[in-house]
Image 1 (cartoon, one colour):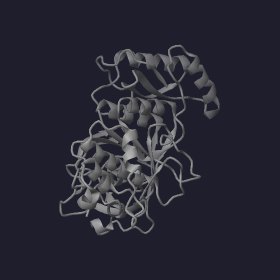
Image 2 (tube, rainbow, N blue to C red):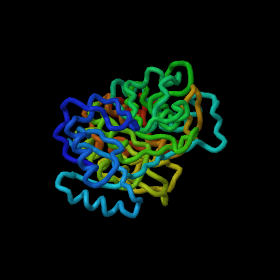
Image 3 (cartoon, helix red, strand yellow):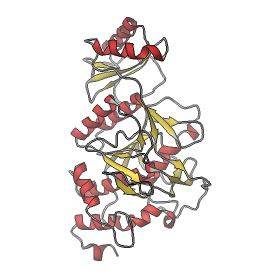
Image 4 (cartoon, helix red, strand yellow):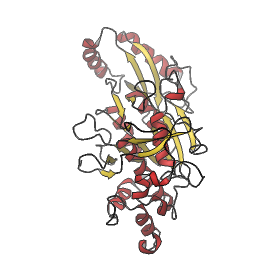
Length: 383
């Protein structure tokens, strides 16, 4: 639920709970906390969590509704009719779009020749023109193992916006894998190379593992709202969302606000017939699917099978799914933005889809795209 928060920007009060631990430069005001408590008392709710969504000028509150699921619709309708309430909705669940390959070896040799997408899209050649240097990329996912040798020094900001896991060492598989595809350090003599190794990665932890030790991860409306708000506040230029879920009014408002402010949003598409599709189905969002999956109109088809990437504890693994196709596009957008900082999402997508790959490849030719932006003949610059 949200209400207009006239206390945003004032002195903050202690959060009424410690389940979520946002680390941004803002918090609840005393006024907003009292308003949330008043609503809880009025409707006999239990206040679970609250945080200001500064981009929308509202306070977002999570309440538990006693009495079980049968009373939820009535309470939501009552809240929607309340003049003090800006919006009320059920908590939605979102799912990260990827999984490790069956039989994948966590100690796989970390060589660039094994990076199928990297090789097929000629990313190495594209790095002659840009590496994404200085481009601010928000990764909304699980956390990232910043101690990984290929990610050490690559994470500019790390914030925890989700419930604290019992074991952080096994909680960040999915986010670490996405970050490796995007920005693993290049030319350091170890491991792999990311699509945009020069980018400044903002790791915004909004998701948690579905169960201990697996890459499958879940997020919800509240944590995604916090992360999107933080991406806007930090003035990220690109946002990667390797996840999907049902239509969500609050998350939609924040994605629209991000697009309005010029952020480029990249999101993963579920396989045909699978549930979800939001926020990749929003106008203005660059939707990315695993090229091995069935075609989905309006999406970019990117390698998403057997993608070698980073996982916690300095290891590497092969991953599959649109979760690992999406950060390749996010990385390509970062390369474009280094050359043309004012580029918008529509133009970025146009540049990618209007540059067909060489005949021997099925993928976007990243080297040719960047060569043309730099005024270089791809035939000469992408040998």
